[in-house]
Image (cartoon, rainbow, N blue to C red; front, top):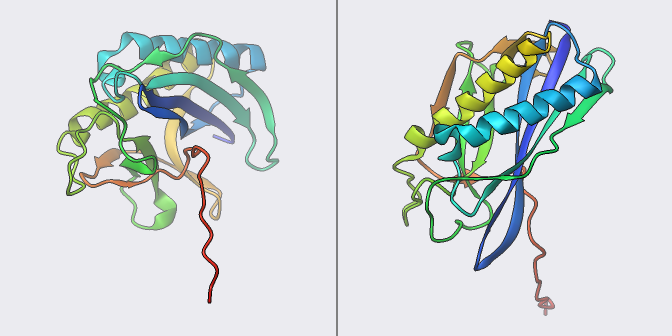
Length: 213
């Protein structure tokens, strides 16, 4: 599959005591054909609708946190630039798992995407806001695997189904920029410990300066 489909799921983390923090996770697919921008928008809207109707996917986020948008883009990895882009137009969808407050801004749950081939070029990671996993004082999230894996895999399946309805077959894979090859994902591994969320925008920080004497 020479065409790549890049799907971004984005949202916000917020409750009554914490300012909103944006987050996003990115899925990579090989595609049999590139959809036009209009169809990409249709696909994005359909995936957001699917998310809203799936209790397992909704359970991947806390109650006051949202799946805000779906962005779908197609491009040829040999040429680079995106050839078509679609952004969902529907309203944000709230998660369904009750939480009292979000965890610290940089804390997340991690889903490792495995392909059955060893090496860093053949595995990927999704950094997911850890708001539905009961983060404990020792950093262990006891329920992460049961809530995160269905959410991660469910979204990938919806992307494939909605793209196929529009004429493009997708294969979920890990893309290696160095090798310029995509390898199909075969296993999603979920760790029980917190990690850092690399793709979340932080709220403004306040610094206090101390001169070196």
